[in-house]
Picture 1: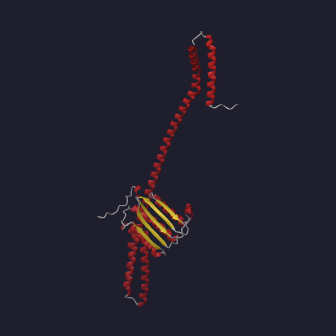
Picture 2: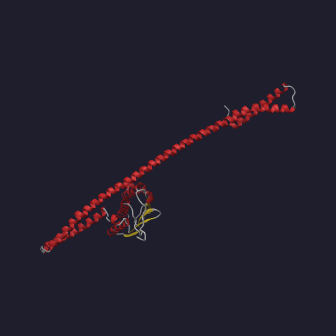
Picture 3: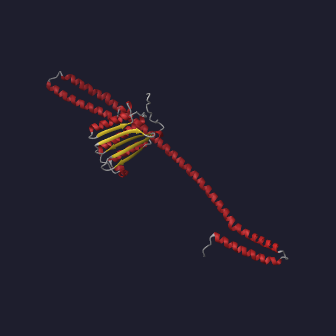
Length: 332
């Protein structure tokens, strides 16, 4: 079969054939009529040509164009309906995802607060029961020293020294379990004391910087941020071999920003795509999950041999259960 002509070429061919047939028919019919004026003959010729060409124009041009327009209108209507349905589905899925994220954040906050309450209970027990009992025992042994022979007194003093060590260890353990400064003073004081205590036991220089005016945050947010920073500092102690550690906390554009920097051995950041394969990666993964659970972000900048910088950013304005940081006025 020959190649089919495209519609425009076919239309031109049919129009030419129709004009030819119409003109031929006109030339054959006019001699059969009585003699007419030349103007009348020309008008009849044109009228007959229009009558014969009009069906061809309608069948091969106007009707296909109308069908094409109707087809496009139907397709556009169907496409519009489909777009509306897809937009509704996207909105519904987005709403479901937002609701799920909100439930996850609330659950994370509730679990964190429940964990912290249990920590407080254990810390209070260590301090009130075990700590006081150890202090009392040491005092009573000291009272007995003067009444004992020198040899026994020396041994009692050794026991008292051991009790002193146990008491200090108990206090440090109590502090690690639940830092009382977090509730009594605030997040800044708690983080500063945490860094100071770590620097006393580790061979690095510690720097701490916070906004001069205190921030008033919800207990839930303070607890999560304190645990996040604790995990980051513990990671530094275990893996970085740092000589200097810097911790800053401040607000910027309705965001709470905490930065932890060290001059340790660093690492390749792309390698953290396989975090679960390393112990330090698990620690950072846990921190990122905690931060994401409260709607925040964690960015990591690190180069082997040049240290690490980790920034935690919490958009406070997104949190329904968290007011923006309130600054004390001058009059206060």
